[in-house]
Image (cartoon, rainbow, N blue to C red; front, side, top):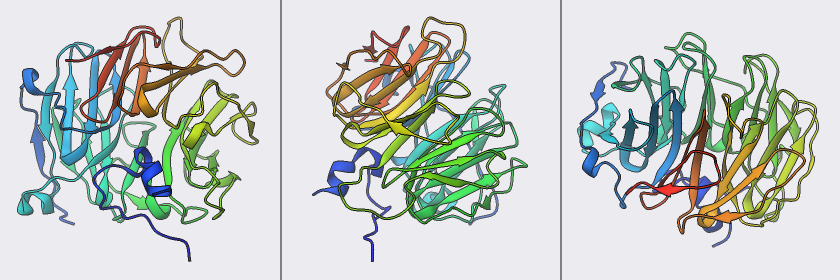
Length: 340
């Protein structure tokens, strides 16, 4: 019987892999942001998700924290989201992932205990959405203002096609899935434990195993993140530099040798007209950054002492976040500066 990872641990499974692998209330409520830019970023926080939509940026993390910025990351506002049960207990669940739909008005946040929040006003307010899944949710992808999918621990897989009601999706196995990305409204990829990659070609209704997909030895690394470079090329990466690449839209995968063996926890495809468009930015342990375009490999840089757990890059604005209140900004994906 395969061991199960507790979803009650404070930090996400994806950024504590070395420790883990080796050592409904139906009524929604809304939470409004408090404007406290001078104290928004705290060294006591751990940040797990980031999203950019135009000039507005979002960061989510431990104990219900949500940071928002309207000036491309220079200053931040802070709020705490609580599930209905959290409000009565005086606690707040960890928030692990965030995605904004095209247009920037609608978005979703996911986290532990199957937590899902939705905004329809660009993050000014967030409403709790009931979800049949109670496992920790690690990642969410928003295809449209009404269509989103989320994945998590022990086979957790759920989608909405009306923006309101979430339904379980039949996952090919009960492994843990850490990242979900879509290249368009039909083609998507999921990265998971034991070198698992799933693919959909029908907008997330059905998924097929294209790599891994079953319990393997402890030496079989998990893939923590997956990203598209374009419609054909993509990269999945994970523990201790394990990585693979595809050139046929995710149908088949081959080994990819990265210039560093550190764990990769996050990836971002550059979007918009900039010099880094067509590249994937990889971030990971001890502040590691790599750029990968499928052919020419850049050098590995460590820009922080903290593990980096999420990264986003859009139209000349890069934001990377991680442990111990780490928030980094970049205009080119190469030079990074910490938010004080």
